[in-house]
Length: 446
Image (tube, rainbow, N blue to C red; front, top):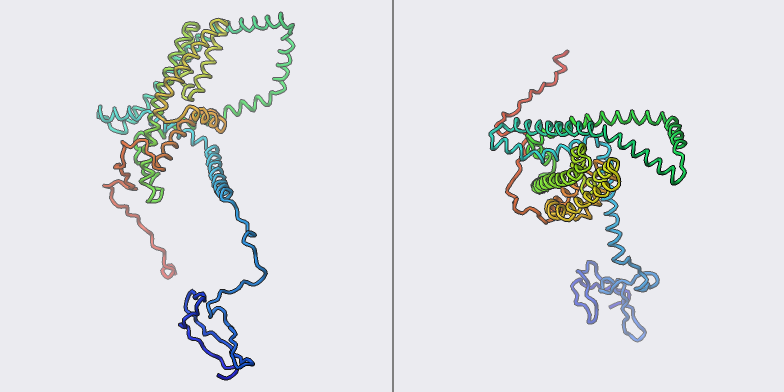
């Protein structure tokens, strides 16, 4: 072989012993230069290291293995959870802001939903037992609720009008006795404070007028909300399945059945909550009302009605209304009667907290009392009285729905056989024929 003559090595040549085999077939022939040595031998220089199967050496200085730093796994997981929690919090804040902006509509619809759940047994009794048509049964149920509420408010108003006539005189006498006691003990001249109070009221006249105008606007919003609530309540009673079918039909087809099954269980939870809360409110109203009847008989019915309405705010409402009853007894009968009335209120609250709430409300909504208290506090902070009223049923509904969607069914006896047909028309409705006007031909116009 002459000098400078190149030798071609085929791709399938067997590798030498100790050589690292290549990962795939060599696509290019290895070129070796053969140079004659002084003693007649040959010296082979590899011009293509990859063809020989040797790994390529990295360029630059060597890097130590410990020089590369990695983020710990705990930090990575904490960062992943953090941005997800922030995203969920931002979505909840946006939903809360939207609901607060539309509270004139959202609150009446929520009230209508609770009223419809409460009146559904009445409507079913009229429809299935008395054979009353569905629409008429829904109307009778709603009108009956309105008449019962109006009668209760009228009767309580008459009791208040007759009872406060005597109570006002006792309150004035008690206030004068209190001022006299303060004058004797602390040498306070309350006449000067009364003059300063009148001066401050005169200075704040514009603010008081603006507040009165705001109260008028609020009254108008309440009227509009009452009309919306009555309208929605009737249709929630008359065609609840059709409305729910329309709502579910807006979702993707793959999610409709699971949302429908979760919604069924949510309605069962709301029904149990409504029935239980009515029972708890009735026990509170009867207990505190009977207690106040021993001291202020003329105001026993208004106090009972007030406690009944306030008890729909769990735990907190009955405490506040019971405190009002205690103050009324204090003004009317003095300290001893007020202490006895306070004991009656505490006794009723203990029965509610240790008997009714754990056994009835706990079975109905499966919420711990701590969760109930926190929900009422958060709801009142975000949306005032309306938030405190709807915080617990909303939390119970969300709890049931989320548990079902995550694989924990609270009501397995309901099953999944109830399928919701998504129909935009009645099954026997004729097809819609919409006449389409053909576009005018410019040639005909000319």
